[in-house]
Length: 302
Image (cartoon, rainbow, N blue to C red; front, side, top):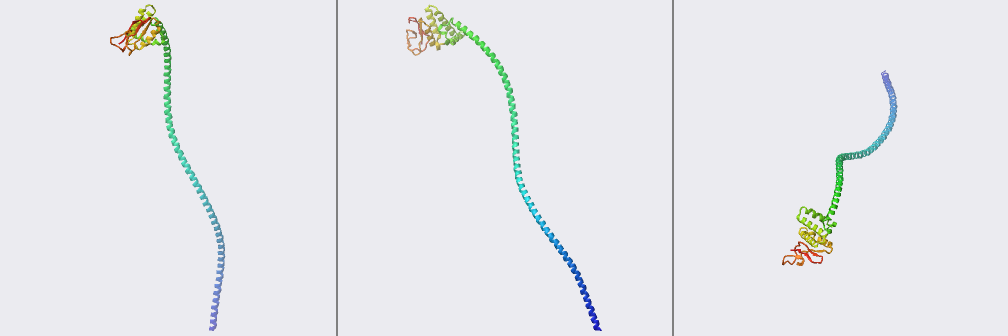
């Protein structure tokens, strides 16, 4: 009985063990089912993960491609930006240079404007001065015209007076001294005769020469010629040689004048001098000879 009980117990423990095994097997099945389900889920997750991985890889590649494109674009933009920056820098420098140039031109323009203003003032002053000068010149021209008219009138008067004077001189001046070359000398003697007694006496002697030359009274003519020679010296001695030649040309063989010269030997036949004088030093008159060559008045010398 105990054996049966043991066997029953053994069987019961066996069935219990079997139940446990079955239970465990059922659990295992359930676990396997769960595992299978999990494996399926994992496979699905793996598939999803693989798909996501592929999608991520594609996205990554696309991102990397996009990133490279963007980097290239940024690099290109950077290069372009550098080029633009260089252009802008060049442009900025150009602008600065133009600004400096404009400033210089403005300063030059200001200076030029000041110069223009100064020149304008100068031109205005010159124009006003020119107007004054023009008016002054006009006045001067008017005065000159008046002066010209007055000078013309005075010349006409002078010419008339000169003609009248010459005509009058013909009445008392020797013919040999009426030529134009003696005109100034005649006028000088006449003017000086008004204030100089020597010139007055000389003029009277010349008038005497004129008067006696118109007559046949040779002695008076010789005396007049001698007085003329005496009053030439010393005040009018510079014309003595010319006067000697002029009178001799007019003599018409009625007389001859001879003028001593300083340095020549003395000659008592036609000179008056102190005894012992051998050489003429000074002349004080000329000698007068008649038509036959005879001495009528000796020359006075020292």
